[in-house]
Image (cartoon, rainbow, N blue to C red; front, side, top):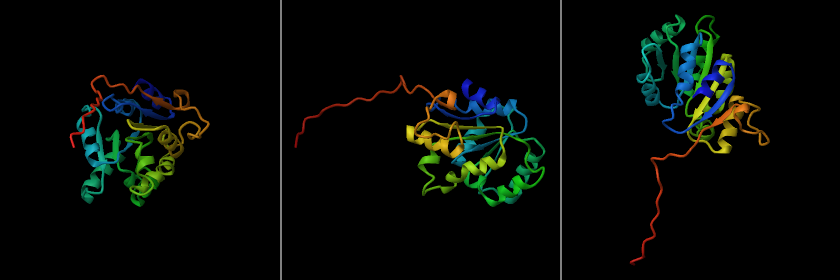
Length: 209
């Protein structure tokens, strides 16, 4: 988490690959608390957004913008965002890429300064973008239009090809080209995968047929 926090505070674009349960979310929660403006978190599922919000400390105010909200609920969230009362705004990729969100970011004063955009479950950029959820393929340009100070992608599941796809979409490092080294200096941190509490075993059984 320290690497991710530092990269965000220094205004970089980064990818953090670490095991489930390793506390990746702290890498954007801590900067959200320390930085001015707002942090926008792109998450694939409403249930994940709600879980994240429930686990936040009271000092870190958060809200969601989702398609299942009534217009009155959305209006309340947007007023709180505009007034600077929200530090973390959770949205789906479809919401971020929607015409209504584009109008929001183009309206002077509607959004505070965007200090950080965090893309949670970033492997979806590679695995879901082609057919299932094409909004993921448009994330890069929509994030660029927000002019964030920093971008942080997070995932626990990423092959080398997926890492390069994420980097290319979000403009991390040199874009994840085939010749680029995927190192912390290039904006990519890959954690340790060993899980001492998990084991795989195999047993050969006689064929009784």
